[in-house]
Length: 180
Image (cartoon, rainbow, N blue to C red; front, side):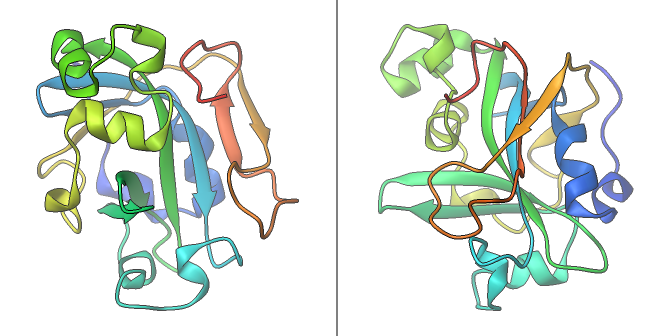
């Protein structure tokens, strides 16, 4: 496996870190996958960090930590906190499955490799990521390794109604594992 990503990687501004997460390798729950899509969140109106709450305090107070939240009463979402000087987190939207595919298929109840982790809730289900890793340091339970990416594009974030003009979604061009 490649070299692990250091905590200092996440200390930089969120919009600098986000595209550089494309190609990194996540290892957790007996599975590995290469990140192909992320979304950046700071203190913009679409972000949990817009207002400081008990849930969003991690975005204000840490970098290089795991921020997992439960959405719509059914899905977990994996984020990495960023920016030692400002509010920030990066939502991991999709990964390309690399190992542990049978386990992922069992957890998700599907056979399609391209649909195993092509959304934030799907990847958490496939990797068995839940609230138990919330607030842990990157590398403590969930490991992140350096990896390579092809061409990276940006677009508006998905599924939000505020700050829709910001092109803060980053993804690997032509990857069949991107959410949409």
